[in-house]
Image (cartoon, rainbow, N blue to C red; front, top):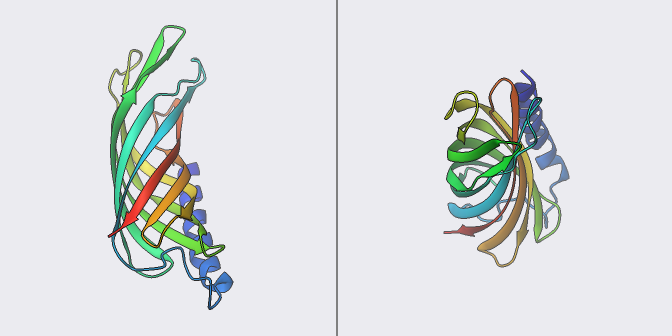
Length: 180
């Protein structure tokens, strides 16, 4: 329920504020409407009340299609790079995929902020409880892009991911996007 509210609030905020703050020189976060691809590395923060917080790493690839200057549809797929362990508990990421709506707003000619909301699935490799659970559900996040060239941008993002009922998962990632 909490994730649903976060996702709906993120979409509503992006949808309602983007046109209001746009000026003739500052357009949406998608300055061109070309499809884009990208890659990110990140740390998943997995916390559960009876365990220490664990942070395995992952690599993620994305592809997106802007539908307007303010809105895009984006697909993501990723896999784990390393596991983390503490106190006898170990967690790694098996697979990750997501399908997101992305709303973007330009703050300057080079910097834009965005929100994502959609459906994602994460398979965790762990040595406790169900060993390889796949959790599918709503996911939402916030991020920023810094445009280096008209086609190349760096990004930073925080994303709340589906997790087991007794756990909590979120992802902090840094990456690069390239407009085709």
